[in-house]
Amino acid sequence: MIWRVIDILTTRDKQRKRHQFTKAHIHKDHDKAISSTKTAIATLFDDHEAQASLAHEAQMHRLRRLLDEKKKVETQMQTKITALRKEYRSHASDLQRAAEQRARQLS
Image (cartoon, rainbow, N blue to C red; front, side, top):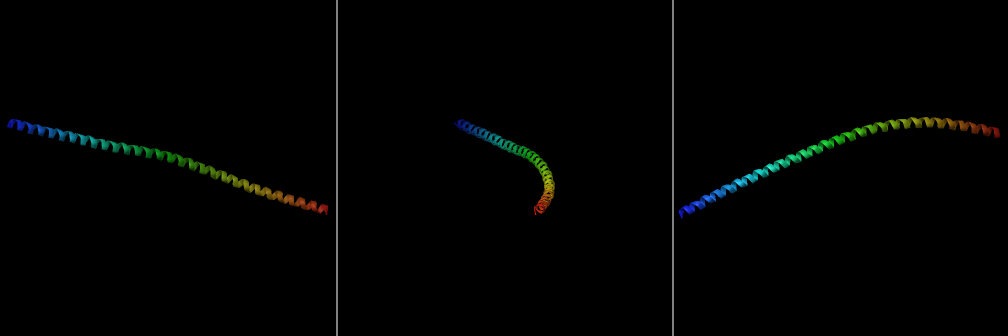
């Protein structure tokens, strides 16, 4: 009977040790999974940030190019407007003289 009690106690101790070992193994796997997930998330965000940065740089390059092109077009427009104003004034003055001369002829 004493041996039976001793057997039960040693069996109980063995079960407790197995349980503690299993529990420790589960905690270790859980910690490993958490670490792996954190690393994967950090990598994912770093990759996304790098891609977003490349896209942003490409957009900024295109924007600068378009702004330069806009500036050139605006300069050309200003030159053309200045030339048109000069021609308009010249034609207006010619028309004015022609109208005055015709008016003198009719008088």
